[in-house]
Length: 139
Length: 139
DNA sequence: TCCTTCACTCTCCTTTGGGTGCCTATAGAA
DNA sequence: TTCTATAGGCACCCAAAGGAGAGTGAAGGA
Image: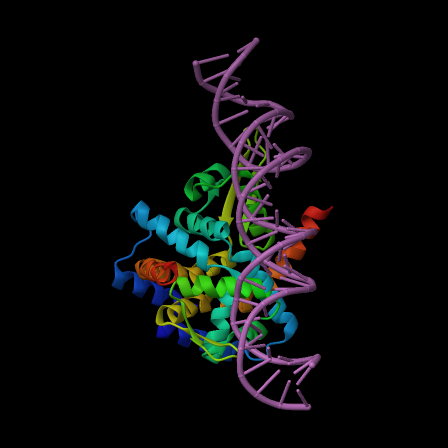
């Protein structure tokens, strides 16, 4: 995990981005972007695309699992709008649409990967903390 | 960013966690944890605590900005439940409660840092992609 | 001729997110 | 004596998120 911290520090050095005192309008934009992007389905779709490359609509749905068509459509549109994926429509008659990650989508996936690793690493501790919390508060 | 990917691969090797065919109950837990944690307020509160160390209730509220008392209370409780922060109540009469990040909270913040850096690095491109998308779809 | 496939769209419905305002108790300030 | 600050709890409310299920349209197989 130290490597991630180091990499992050390196990126901050390179880009000259420090958290303390970033201009407020940039902060607002960043918050907006984070708000749009840091959602469950976006993360899961990025995961699926990273693992399997170009996918079709129903393939994404199957890989993600438990997502309704509505949310899948909506999330894919949002991601396309934000430039995280590209959408290629083949105008054939059983419709054929392909979704592919863009470069910045790949970068975001890589950035999110740390969170996945965190979740996989610590989910047992989170479970334990929840049980302990319930025991403390429950009585 | 390759360093992150490498670190992740190393962690997966070490822990024996592969995405393809991870036990379904673990997958469910990880998704649940991600779902709980990948929310706007949690991220912003972690940010505030990382930057300023131990904070009181109203301090957190001021630093986060734009959050209602209700959501602040709720989010802090959830984070305490998940073991991301500790809550220390001083039983004095103007109430005094202190919130501090735990170790796994710190790790999560570090993991999320990559996403913040991504947002700061690419938000201009996201803006551009959105404008281009609107121009494409708008007419 | 009917059914199936794909990638949606539309409508209806329930759940959740989140805001506002009112309540607490008491030490100390005005 | 009255007001304020602190960290919430509680009740009510609206809006948005999100799920379920039906519909769509045309090509090609049975």
